[in-house]
Image 1: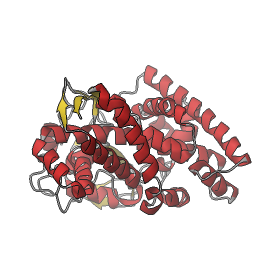
Image 2: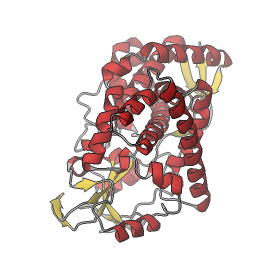
Image 3: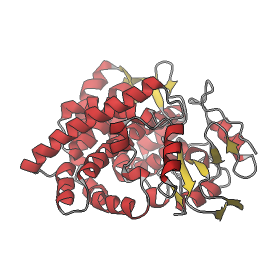
Length: 404
């Protein structure tokens, strides 16, 4: 069956949920011609595909000429820096190469390790609120949400604080090129951003090689010297950490606040019961997954989701839709900060589960805890503008009034 699904339609970004519900009502895994593959929208199907290691991100299982054909068809060719650092990153690898890189980076992203960042993140948030609360009216996305993740990831990597905004802009250009609208202008921006970011990281690599510090770049240089990573893998992995971590956190911070504004009784409960903050953050991720869509390929002929699929079949995993599946959640369109259990898929599942999920939750818990503690009320103050397309979900503009 062919999917009637158009994420480019006006209004999809602000309210994709009816389109997802319509997909869940279709039998099997409907084919989406614009994507060239089949869409999984129900929790049972999305989870099965995400957990099966026969379903892969990359195309190394195909002959080289077919890999090149797919690369050209997707307009991911003639981009030397993008092909060198982005298309070969850990996110796009499978099997032993993926596992090797993940093992090298994982120690920096354990919950215990990231807890050491709590004082630094708290200080940054307090300073930002000191500046913003007296203004009264702010764009929450631009003035707060868009600043925090880049600063925290930059601090983790070892880059200077004043570079965070530039790195975030480069990352936006790279990430936006993964959506289905790959224009020549977007392609040029993605390639230029990758080249500039690589240059910055090469300079930091040289600096930390001379004088190591307690940061991710220094740790990755150690892994490179131990033969665990190549030089290009160090640069590409650190680049990917910003690409994967900053935009999704910005988006879920915005959609999380919008959910609280739309459900004032939940915001009041969170003020009264701050111990619910970790659960509230999980519900923000479930309610509006910031990364709604990822792909997989069948690396061999296989049976899954009740059907036979030939090698090379492409699948689209709609995590955001699965998280609103009434077969998996009671009142799935509702927003409940005390929801338990809350086994959502906003961080993915299986070997490609989000490496930075602990960092994203830490940022959110701190920001919302301090914001609710320091303002008496938060009120909507204008039109909310949402991102378009399928690659990311979140408000581009979220004007609010902060009342001390």
